[in-house]
Length: 268
Ligand code: NAD
Image (tube, rainbow, N blue to C red; front, top):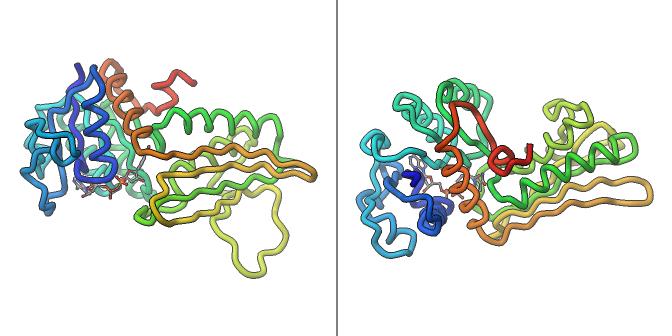
């Protein structure tokens, strides 16, 4: 049995993760954490997730429960995740990370704090999206970058704070790699005004925000005479939460290192 702690327990993903742990027979929830200024500190995490009491109270400090879990699942914000990585490294705890939107400095700090521990980090934990990463790379390899213009569209709910989504960026990396391109050099994150004709070597991104959209992504390969589109539409956060709990159970028997959901699914 994998003992799991969930941080950001009152968040959209946190509550869904509490439910997903309850549904997984190989996992048990043994700790729940929220930001110190949350009004929900002290409340029962099962009730928070609408499941009825589970006896695991929400705490404000990861160090108060650091000996109570094997794997921390963290879908919060970059600043919180970097600090949690420091705490987990000091206590040799494993981590599953779903947080997106790290800037370069946060990514650098995170990379140093996870040295020596086992971490599974993915911009998307759904099986369907991980299949789309593979399909998009295959499409780029077969279609090539000479005749096909590549654009990535994504849509999310109005509360999402980072753009483009981490998943859209991962799709960009998946298609850039087989084309021998570096996404940082070829990504176009918005167009306005007199942009000039499209540079074939670019990969364009378009973002929409609104309503309660859980997450839509399309990679489009456009040539003269045809268009290939690879689309994923999430209709429930449970697809991400189930994958993250599966990753936590898998991670328990792994050595120190940085893994992603492709490792968990055996897609590499
Ligand atoms: P949310 O705002 O609903 O939840 C975030 C929660 O984290 C909040 O409850 C907040 O209070 C809490 N939090 C912030 N700082 C904290 C701290 N220091 N300690 C403890 N808790 C803290 O957001 P969400 O929609 O649940 O998304 C959270 C993150 O997960 C985002 O970065 C989002 O992009 C990402 N996400 C990833 C995937 C994936 O599959 N990888 C899927 C969905 C969302």
